[in-house]
Image (spheres, one colour):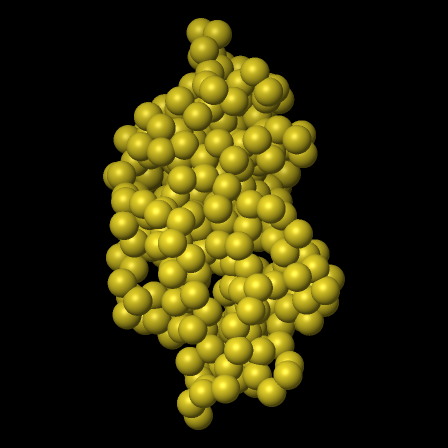
Length: 288
């Protein structure tokens, strides 16, 4: 069916319950269809996730309505120069009718209006329809990423000191990110510092890597693979479905597997616009 009467509007905090329900049902339905565990494990988690994005000043939100009821939503993480898409979710009752495409075009237009040099997202490898949608919208596949999960390693690596980050580390973290990615993600690091989840790794008294957390919605950057290994090794847990490890970093992925972590699923990192091939080690977040 064609969606001709779809209305798109900015999201508000009052939309959290319905958009959160749709977020859970959409992800759970697609995951179950392909025999994978859902990225959003319960309706409560879906509501909390959407509420966080709706109320954060660094996120742009758009809600889709049809015949007076909410049928989907999408978000754009604008905390840094390069923007990240998601989560984009559509009510299972109206999937495959063009709602997702409209929601994607809206955030892409928003990124263009802001002059964002690049847009990024991660896409579940088992969901062929969304992969096809993003390719048709102009996104290019850049990397395959493995989501890995398991018991925390709780060990230190000799020569690599991991500690809680402080506000004074923000500049050094941004320097490492620019060195590896060509751009920084300072807005996300600042949020992680406020939340107390940010960690840095030091070699010879110098910050050589950081993690906003070791979790699905967090990212990490290191000058070398051992810098990121040290951050993973020291993590008290791996939040959400797990951490995201680029498959191209075979040393890091093999180390994760030999340390008892297991691959949950594969994802595609996709981009439009500015993309600097990473010169170092990194773990993307589910947003990018």
